[in-house]
Image (cartoon, rainbow, N blue to C red; front, side, top):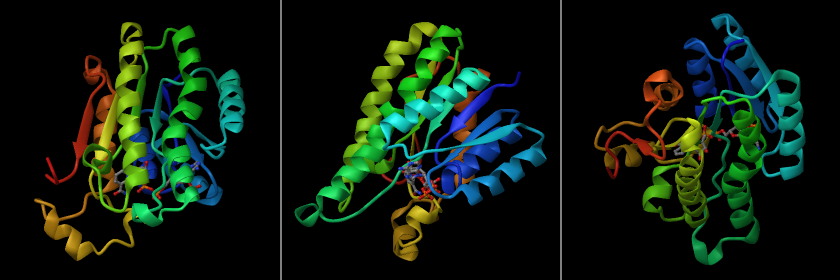
Length: 242
Ligand code: NDP
């Protein structure tokens, strides 16, 4: 059987590019979405063209019970995953003095809560099957540095960095690596409202990044050649705040 990787939030954006890139490099993909099943099915068709296998799971990463049930059942049917890319995430920007409870809670519960909800049911089967697997989490430059209007998002993404480093220490002796990719500004629905021309001026490379440029690093971290890299945060940012 091929090596299978769960990519959360792979119906669109960076997650879609990661799923396609990994499939092009010989991995089978467990696609995942919350609402956009049709878009996930389009991604599945593209993966079929690479010759790799894929299936789709649908659940809200905030929903702990559903995450556990669906992931556990999928592993029971198909076996433990080789890898997971914890990509699904949201931003709900607002300045802190007027940030609503739901803007705080939804972002923390999705981005950081998703770490526990998705990875907890995945890790034990990986250990039991002695898989020297790979976990890659998605943080952000906003989690490394903090960003105005993103106190909630920065907190969630900084939390992911801490959780990634701690989990890397716990799993190191099993040969499972846990690393974090921290993108700068990348083309996707999340960034489509940004004033692109203004943003580009701040980036040393004077352009926004692509999902594929993030995906190539994730693919490296999933491969044999990265087996001694763990607990690291690597930024893909065109030189922004490096
Ligand atoms: P998009 O908004 O384009 O896509 C988000 C994806 O996550 C979708 O597949 C969506 O599923 C899924 N998702 C969102 N919320 C949930 C949820 N509660 N449960 C399950 N799935 C969910 O985002 P990007 O591709 O831009 O971002 C991907 C990751 O990269 C995120 O973690 C983001 O924080 C991070 N990042 C992005 C940057 C950027 O510049 N774009 C910069 C730094 C980090 P559905 O389609 O079903 O809604």
